[in-house]
Amino acid sequence: MTWNNNQYRIKIAGIKFNPFLAKHSIQFIIIAFLGTLLISCAPKPVINAEGPYWVDDDRKPIPEPEFDEPNLMWTSIDRSFFDQGLELFDMDRNVRKISGNMTQAKNVNSFDEVLNSSWFTNRHGLPQTRMTSEEIATGVNITGGPDTTGGWTVFRPKVGGITPGFWIEDAQDNQYIIKFDLKGFSELSTGATIISGRFLHACGYNVAQETIVYWRPDNLRIKEGATIKGDDGEKRPFTMDDLQEILDSIEKNPDGSIRSVASLLLGNVKGPYMLKGTRKDDPNDWCPHQHRRDLRGLYAIASLINHEDCKDHNSMDTYVGKDGEGYIKHFLMDFGSTLGAAGYGPKKPKSGYANYTDTRDMGVSILTLGLWKWPWEDGKPWTNPAVGYFESEIFHPNKFDPSYALPTFENMTARDGYWGAKIVMAFSDQDMAALVKTGQYTDPEAEAIILQVLKERRDKIGRYWFGKINPLDFPIVKQESGTIILDFDDLSVLHGLEKPGAVYQVTIKRSGETLYGPIEVIESQVSLTSEQWQTFSEGTGTSENSVRLTTLDFQIKTSRDNKKWSEAAVFKLVRDQSSGQPRIVAIEH
Image 1 (tube, helix red, strand yellow):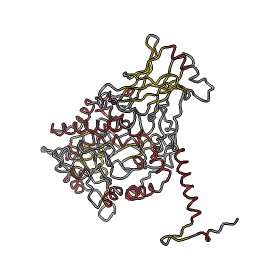
Image 2 (cartoon, rainbow, N blue to C red):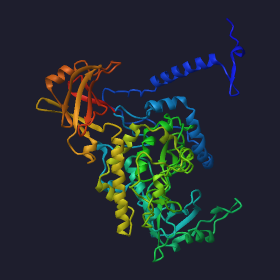
Image 3 (cartoon, rainbow, N blue to C red):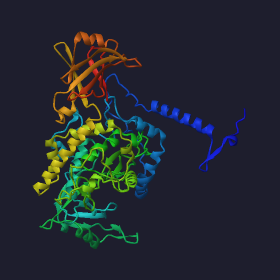
Image 4 (cartoon, rainbow, N blue to C red):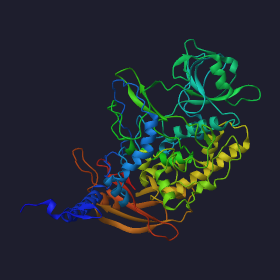
């Protein structure tokens, strides 16, 4: 039979319509939807018999790449309009989002943690690598800051951004970019920069060494041959008049000294990294950036310090080592617009709660004829010029919005948010106090306000993301008097977000078969006799030539205040072939 499309076409409202194709198109869409739903399930982690891998081997020698800096204006337009528009027509992503099966991060180990790499180093977030408050406050310390006993040579004015600054070389031949507070807002930007940089370093990110330094203008001289772009875009000599114009725009102390942030030169910079795709001239860059857990989970981390300016261009790639022997290292940078600070002074109430151009918010306003009122519209005015606009009352951990819609955050899953929240919650009150002290505020009230807001935002972040994922984590297994004990932390109870008294439902399975339970316990531990362990674990573990690993799955659900059971956190154990003892090899949430 020959099919004649034209024979069956009709018009509805002036649009050509083919009933046969429409019928089968609907069938195709349903099949595609179900197929996508099936393949969208998160892949199981690769389990190693010895436990999780902790190092990503992404520091192999590569040829030195060229400097590359994408167009900032185009990237901003792309993030604000095209990225969001294309998401509407991304069937695979939309199905995943509706079904709750967004593509999971790809750079995690079998414990669902991020591996150490050229992007990230596990520091304060894990119990085994936790830092002291003093170490958090010290941060990156390579030179201790610029030498103020000798003169400084200004060799380049700061370009890019809206805050003034310039590059200097001190008497020790170390180079720094010097950044300032704007007039009328002493300590606002410099304090925020130091606190946020040390916080992000403790979280695990690569950041530059930054220190607060006090100096006097008469220590400056201009390097011969230094240039600046004139109003016509052409380069001309950088003069003392140009330098004085910068100095006239910044805050000075009553004694004439100047408080600044000195940021140590990163080294052989190669331009910022993009928050989508990979760097084509870096063979080590294997994971698409929008699927990196360390960049997705940054959402929860950045929301604490209101780092709404965490766009593509506030990052930097550097080449570490000699040409052909080095690798690319990835940095976060420029924290002057965190906490209550912005480049123009105190933040506006909208900052951190809506994109600069928020097409989705615009759609809501249009549909409600402008009657919808956003919480930030009732934001209270700031009261302290050293703090700016930094609050916790209207803050919601899932309503944080950076300046632009970022692919990393748009692809974030609950597991990514939970990972970031675990790191945020690792900062105790004492840690927070040590962080705020590094801002060197002269007004005790400013220090007290920032500390209080940070603690309140921290606890909101923990409550929200721990409510999305059953927060049982960091298991350890031990033996006591012939009893096998699996201990785990209930992070909500550990951090004081929930009262003790939760009930835990334990089921032990092997290859889908229930061996034990479900039973209910009130302690955050599971105990088995050595005989039970021997019986249950028989057949688990692996030999040297095994292709597949059989695990004993401890599935634990949580109920608080007699409410419904949560999803299970699963701790996977194997039996060591030589000792017969249990070993934890994977965690699933």
